[in-house]
Length: 426
Image (cartoon, rainbow, N blue to C red; front, side, top):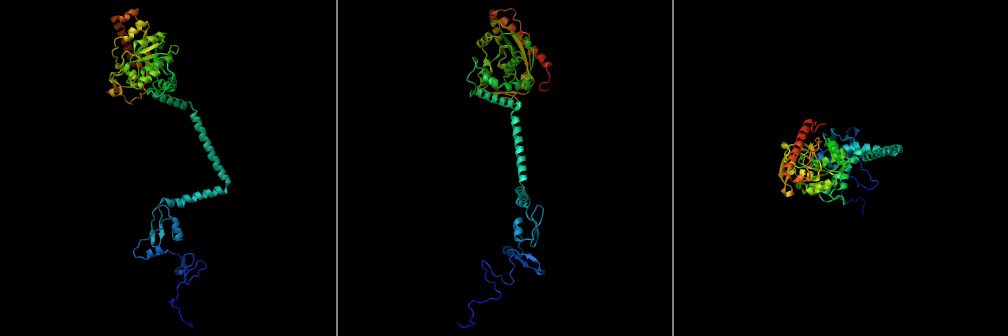
């Protein structure tokens, strides 16, 4: 092969040699490895990536700001300030306000602070020990406060009341209760579980005041009271008054009319609390045991009075309670109850035949009674005028004693209403 034969490939002067993986030769005039070039005046300027450089050369192309602080710092050191809320970003071509994102704030402030805290804890074992000690102390304090709260009498009483109320609901629905009840259907376990709730309602919610409890004779007697309020609350409240004011007497029982005794839920619940169906057989049996028996001669008419008719007594029926007193030869004690009309005022009546009720009472808060004051006054026993058991069949005697009892209770009610303090105050 002759000398001087040139290669078939055309040679280009100043062509850049191919790059190699290691130890590549830098061609004359190539930029240094750091990505900076020698600008006018000998100063180093940041090298713009090819893609952005091509975009910048196009006429009218918009300038694109770096997305995040880390990207801008890695691509163009020295021309970008950390992106913070309210600051501007310097980009080739002029200033432009970059969009503020939460990630930028986290990278600029939160992340460095977190890393510094971790480094501090790693360098100083004492700091880590102190943090754990303070955390353990706070946890122990919280546990102590929680335990003391659970042991407080108020919270324990509230828990017992809630448990008793849930059991009462189940008993009313026929889905729970004690297996053992007395001969009349009273559930002693349910009554005991409801004692915290009963005590709260009697003492704090209704603030019951009892007058003339000493007039109740020892032994069997008939307590004749007015029936009022849309809910049958007066029987249980009067029963509680006797237990608290005259604990030496046998436990009283109260009679309820058929419309309430056979009503869904309420009838079963009242029976488990001590109520009985109003009939002569039950009354005579209770009186034979020497118990005080509570009767409401107005019956369902007393509960059905609208609020505008409050404390206006209805007829006392045919005097069935007088016949019982004459046949058993027991005294009749008149009782006036004020406060039930305000606790459960009857505003209207809705048809209730679909639920097995004569009507559905409409009250301000449904089945929840209002915190009205209650006053219970016992009167002097009505004189039977020396009539014997045979007088129970004499209509004139029965009517006269019935009207006398009714007038006595009406007069007692009017006196109590004049003398009692504010209904809801105090």
